[in-house]
Image (cartoon, rainbow, N blue to C red):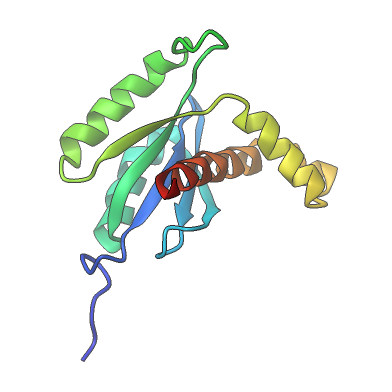
Length: 147
């Protein structure tokens, strides 16, 4: 007997580092322990990508980086993110949306690439920064759920 993993409690969280041009995506393992960079998608193609991905994979939740200023107020970038959040909540009403403070994730992503020995040319590729930032956002969410 072949069991489809979709809807069998093996859902994953999809981490999203939303940007005006590109959006970084990350996924976690089925045990919801480790976040990994997944891909980077042009933001104009994001809705169709998520529709296709959720048709094939069991997504337990969307984890979106939500930028805040140092005074903890939302940054100006949320005006681009809020409509996307509303879209997800309406289109995928059965999948929860979680917002995670994403301060410093881009700097942390670059530092992770340097520490990991990634060559300078690959570090300059913003798509790498975006998907690693998404993984950092998702990992911080997973770590908080364990507490």
